[in-house]
Image (tube, rainbow, N blue to C red; front, top):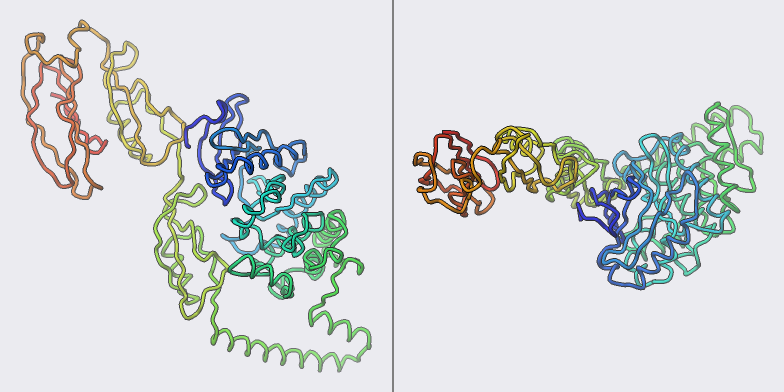
Length: 564
């Protein structure tokens, strides 16, 4: 789609994301001259016109939302061959990618991100709109620290089409409240649960419930108790750990009564951390769960034990911790699971070293385009960071970034052709069709124009065509007729040259060989044919006149450029 104009308005510049439902493209609104995010419905779902219409209706219903932390919906069109939603363009990284790459987020940073998210939810709820499908992929943090929540409106379309929701269940099952899995409608309480899970993941680098299938995750949500965040990351204050546990209570009635209550507590925690003053959540909003350490502290305080008892209890506690630690180590060695370290963004050598430290074997799984990860570094892992792999078969596959799926075409106009060819190759493109024409303004053998134009986006390796100047036109038009090779119509002397051609042995398949001649007749193609890698041959070329130029292209690349 790169380079296409959608709906006579949106020029597609580059792909910035792929999801289960949408592919997202950075695009330019040619009418208002601004960047937009064009979310194009994937082909599988675009063919379902009813679903496409439901998507449009869902996004249109939230288009009136106007909040600094909510991405604005600009247009939704289900009628075109590629149904799309145009949204405000946000430059930044979503929370899921951030955790995948760097692991858990610092407490203060997590608060600075989640408070604006809750402010967005509070505003939406006040306007009787719930998100219903909140995931870390829907929270984008810009380079300036600004936070935006996206995809308000999608959940209503999925509710109307449960068969599609089932197909993409794994995309959001970790963040869905238990009552949603049981068939309840999205609500304020379910948005609070989703926000709590996202905060849990930011603080700990892991999810409260893991599973290979949507059903297994839903069963754990319904039956199991999540590990208290503070036991995974001791840097988390108890008040914030309590807040997370309250937000992800299984029963909606036991969560915060509304987003405003959760937001007020989170702001208080943030302020207390900034001034170094402890903060405890009001008991009415704290979850009934308490970890062993908290229970022990409560009992001791109530009974008023003497100092010696404290010392004995501390000693007993240390012994118990050491025993539990030894047992845990034994079980870990005996079992089973190794946590995949955060290897995304590393070089292969760096990743292999880190993987070796924990006993994981890395396997090359090819390459993939990435707009976020530098070329040559790891852009994808399977399984992802923080996932578990069996100790008996500790294998992780990786894919290396090929760089962006589209990049800016260099400015060639005015450059000598040889320099233009070099610029094209330096930027990772291929020299395409080269034609010539006379110009009174552009010097001989300099580029008059190019296609694609300067700064447009094109896939790496694609061809860039050029029109090269022959200088000021001094000969009559008949003398430049490329189709007439009759020497009686030329005034220059006939000369013959033996042109050597060498097709690289490492070329990928048969290569097109072109020999282009510029002489008194204008520009002619002496040969244009395909040759296998490693072929070496000579071609006799007949020319006319004293000023002769012969260029040899192999596979679109200029191999030689000689003037005689």
